[in-house]
Image (tube, rainbow, N blue to C red; front, top):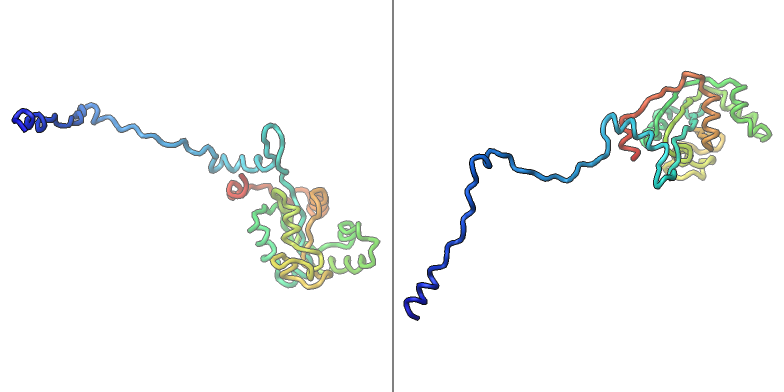
Length: 216
């Protein structure tokens, strides 16, 4: 190989070096690009909006979810006497429902008869009234999305021997006549029973700080 060829192969240009930034560019902060932050409201804004959103979901102009309901839950005299009040309340709290009214109350006979008036023709009605008025009961008003149906599932079948394990009656009761707790069977009855057992001003209007973590 002649000298000219060797010279041509060894004289390739050196790679270009990056231009040194100017002093002004060094002082200018780098431009950063972040993904758009979530638009979900937080804190107080989410708290105000959570309940409103729970009342009705709207998609393409139509409602697609049920509204917030209230259910009347009563711990019967046997539940009070056996010291089950705290455990029963805890099950509803852990589910995520909001307690709006609570009181220990000695039920008079006329109120018990009004509450169970749909059973007045049943042969067990006199014994039922005697049982409900035999000691104090715990009256509760619970609120939440689908609370009526969910409460019925938490409580279990009327006959404790048929109630699923994990339900209140399945775990804590053995006989229909001493089945620990009552729960409204429909949203309309929930309203009626709460109005029957609570006077005006006895329910507390408040919001839980956990609402945004329970309802989208």
